[in-house]
Length: 235
Image 1 (tube, one colour):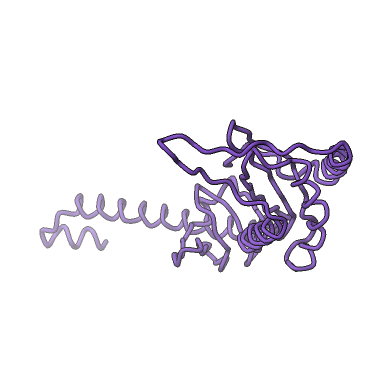
Image 2: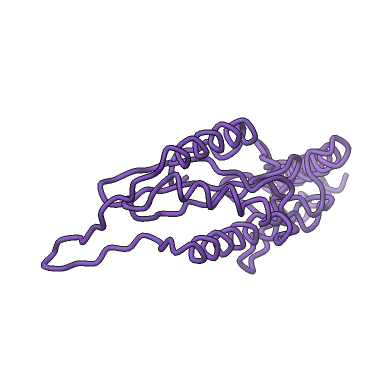
């Protein structure tokens, strides 16, 4: 009746009907997206895929979950940015706080240093690092030599911790290892150029006792940390 009356008044009812259909369709699609977002949000909450405070990686973004809302999830990326993700778009989530993470550091020292002596220093002092860095859950562990060149060798130390503590534990480990090496007169690797040539010190020979002790320490640490810090260098 309304459209007939409008037609009598000269209104183009065909165009009006088409427009109304488009508006109704748009509203229905909008409602569908909203309902999908809400349902996905409920599944996230009920299934416990992640919770507020968890560190997650999704769609190339990594951050701490601030809020799981009705329609969106808010993530703090650690750089002062808050990311808003539609719940229906969240997939392939990596929850980094479900299990313990590990902090991994690499230390480069001159190849001329006695490796068994360096390993003896680590054996004597690594255990005390755990007491000085409360955020460490297990370790630190010595993973061995992960890179070697004609002038330098790179060793790795790892420790388990919470994902939220990983950055601070890595910084603390670097400091502690630097201090313990300095106390034993082991300097970090650096090149000294003279006429464009690197100056190298003569390798220090290890005694049979040092070698045997180093072998025992390596086997012990390999067993203790077999599931930690096995990724390639620089990853």
